Amino acid sequence: MEQDKNKTKNEPTPEDLLAKGEELFGSKVRFDHWMNCPNSFFGEIKPYYLMFESGGIKKIYQELIRLEFGVF
Image (tube, rainbow, N blue to C red):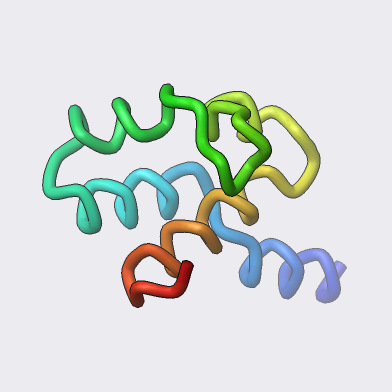
């Protein structure tokens, strides 16, 4: 059971994703726009669709971190 807590703690949640997106883009509207536009980093897939794949939230969150620090 303790291992499950640690795994959950290390994985970003949808709430974490929203908070980081709003922080990075300055508003929920701009973040929603980014989430619903094809993204070359994800093979022209809209980031929104990745939320429903295993590990998708983590992938999107990591991309937001890269954008935040200017790593392309």
